[in-house]
Length: 132
Image 1 (cartoon, rainbow, N blue to C red):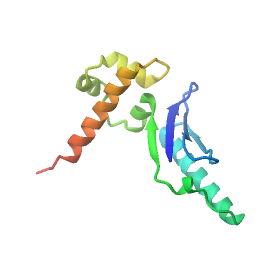
Image 2: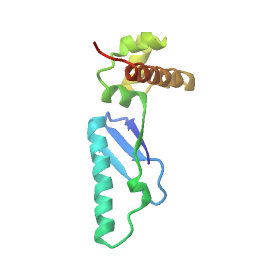
Image 3: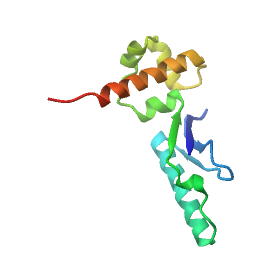
Image 4: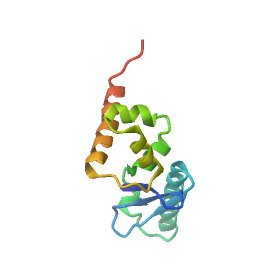
């Protein structure tokens, strides 16, 4: 199941599924972690309700979750990523990336792709890393 996580205009976060016919779930919170927990709680509650009612549990509730973050949610959840250093890595002005992190600033598809490619690059580098 694909789950979108976004920062809302009031500064809170929302997690909602973008797939799963007949299954619409939402989680909210003051942080991304809270929104994810609330979303997972929604899955658990719906599963329990189906079982209590003798209904089949929708297949979507049993699927592996794929999370899709907006830029603001990404940097809030993965706060270990230094925004200025990451901006330098991907070739984006650090002040602009901080604006993206705060939310409410338009991000072009090209900039979004650049940020995502940088995240994937870091992930690949970390998976090949060994400590001595």
